[in-house]
Image 1 (cartoon, rainbow, N blue to C red):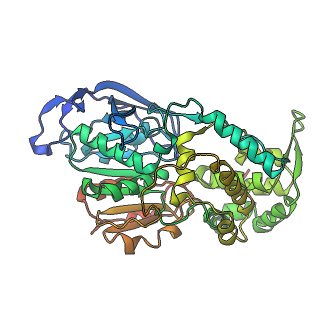
Image 2: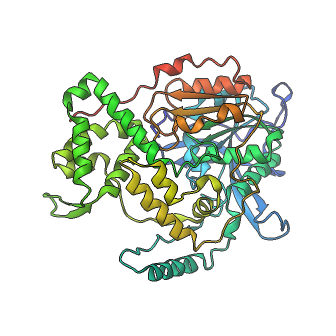
Image 3: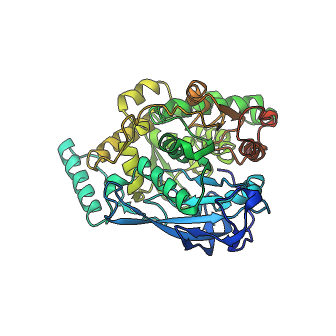
Length: 488
């Protein structure tokens, strides 16, 4: 996500009560399940360094709601009170993506990134169970199984799962989206809000849909930014989506006088690069003497990651040109990715292994992604996930988990036309499923776009009106002030 303009907010612990209409509000101490919230500062480093003054507390909820007196889990909650003098009765719950991002860290920039919205609405941030300060639990990096027989690889993964799950102190099955949606509603009730507005980015838009399905009477409006409906197999479509995003970027370069002038053979150079990397290429850094082997999968990973932000996408034409010329080290400095294996959050693994929207069948990946540069990458990821998921317990999911969310709640879907992960093509069924919805597409090579261009004002207008009827989105056609293509 491009860096939002972030300023520290100066707020006080004593402000208006969240559960009353603005005209009737009185000055009082904020509470969470009757316990006063305390002043705090929320801080985040990604997607941009940010701080915000807030009121914080924890809410204990049952780990397993079928056992309400059993083990409890403490949820981290932060409320950034509205900056204006007359706050609306309904707050905005901002739900972070991943899965795995902690909202009280990731969305530290949100109040300043959406100043008009924040002027009239409290911003509520909840670290989803299994993230941040809500009992985050990590598993060790997946072990390498290259060169092992299927039986030996399976045994190694079984040992990895058994050792990783030993003593984690949580029930992995209770870390899924449907349980997290009930957590959000528990926080809503504990803060005294009758209805809420929702904003979810990327996977956060998925969790918003679970909340809509489970607690529709509590939602006034919702904004789904860089998301895909839960009945659409976003991972199985990823190779095709990334190919379409790259094609759009190459076309934009061809139509840009400076970019086309610098790289007049870009399409041909890209074809040359793809052909070359059908066989792994050893790259040597002459300055350090270090070397690495790069294959199609690593190439695709670098290109795909760059396409998720406008700043990264602006580097892709030059990176392709340098790669075609054999200047691999310079190219990797522009769009390279770190292939170091990192620990993974248990909640993310449980969600991705258990929920229908995250299905990742290798056969479907191959069918839907035929002809995509990213197909080798997506096939490898699908196979790796299948191997991992075979050794993790299946999480709690609702009946009809694969069904579309049909609702009359007003919804605003936001998408970048060049999003390689959750593109506008995934929103084709929205109008039929959600009759009070609108889809707004911003000309942008970007995954998650609500903070770009005029969209913060559009979002604020939508939330204020409580309807998509008559919503003025003409400014969106201008796009965002994207960085120019890097030419050298």
